[in-house]
Length: 412
Image (cartoon, rainbow, N blue to C red; front, side, top):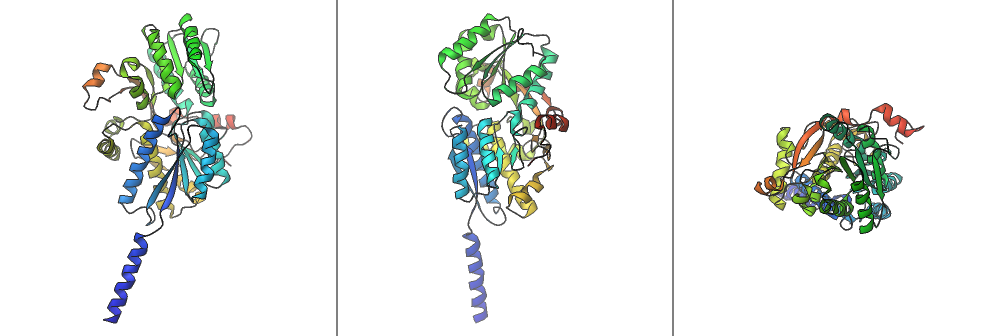
């Protein structure tokens, strides 16, 4: 009897230790305020769903997962400082971001501290190009990947057109302009004009000056290489000036939140790219992707955006790498991630070893008419997929990547 009592006590003690196990912490560095707060909300929601799903299956290595979140306000220095704060809280990895500048700054600080950083919504080529390193992975597509799928679609369907570019004068804006000019053969600035908005604190007069210059041109296609509030204000003004009646408007990186905030009346017919839409799992017969869509709808009564899918995928992929390696340390996880192929919310994807870019299908999309959108049960069926390109065709080759890197031909 005494032995039985001792055994029961030991069993209860073991169970208690497991139930009270210290959680494994991960950090979300995201814009809760500022220019990209709507995208930040989607990142947070996707991350929460992933953590809940993982914990419902026993956590990671027998420990529950805990999400810590800090507001980056889309500011590079704030994002960098958040990395130090996360490190003090003993997180095992960090992810997030809505600009390339914050991904580069926060990613470099994470490198200094030996922490993995997964970039979301950070499209400049430099993120996994000239600024890439061993501790930085990017789930979202690059400017080059977006430009190539757009360039192919426009070349086939709208050849020999005159372009005008309005861009934000930052790392991503310059990157996407360069890539789109190359993919659409619109490098001649005398024929294909441009206007650059200041990277911070653009004013109404700046937007109007840029749009007036576009209106005075003979452009057939107006490229708005803008994000967040800059894009919203420019699109509304462009619609008021009726530029959409004489130009095809291109927004290189579209999102659900953009259409929601600006409205389908203004956005109808706009063409851009997405790495994922809520229709993709059904199109590519992804059962886990369709389950994610249904879970998101059940929690938030909305369709998930690509940013939510990106955050969800990152948490799931990091947890999968931990399980496969049996380790939480960064170096074993890098080895588990490099060249790892998987399918989660869509068709096949891969974390490429030489640059840590996630290689996946990229889609050219067009915003549907308001009439179509209003017929949808959730009134959020915003995007029609009009073209797609395989990730291997869209992403830069090893030779291209090494040309950009100069003397540093491998990640350090």
